[in-house]
Length: 233
Image (cartoon, rainbow, N blue to C red; front, side, top):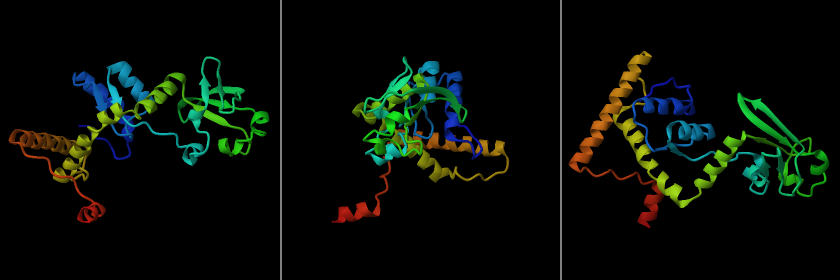
């Protein structure tokens, strides 16, 4: 049980939690997480440092080209890290490869020449830039390849079957909220709030153990009103 201030992002706690589990020799072989906790660096670090496979949805490309469905998203380009250039779907080759930092992270900015992009017959599907040429912002090679691998894996039936178990985790969170009111801090002071969280986690463990030992069946999940109407029909 880890207690943080409300402004702390979920993703900042992924690695500290795994380091704490490693110190206690409680690391799992697989860790099912929601999309808010994981990133390409997390997937790599947990695998290389702790041997843990993060099973988590990787955030998709949110560029306007990807959202439009008809545009050329980043995955439509072939990235050649060895020769430091990219090739677009029309087989044009980029001319600039700039390794820099953005928002505190290492990135690679790839730029295609305006002389190629401006007369391109599908330019409107590729870029709306005022410079009328396409730019790509990439992660370093090891992160880029890890991200593409994760994107590919999450489309497979095996990955989807593994991730279904995440429903049990969400069920535990829901049960903890309903039985212990863990979302509200009843005390003043960080230490007291953390102690409340520890008691809540202990109570849920005991509650679930009792249900297992006594054979108490799982409660039925809530049925939405439209689903109830469909069943009645």
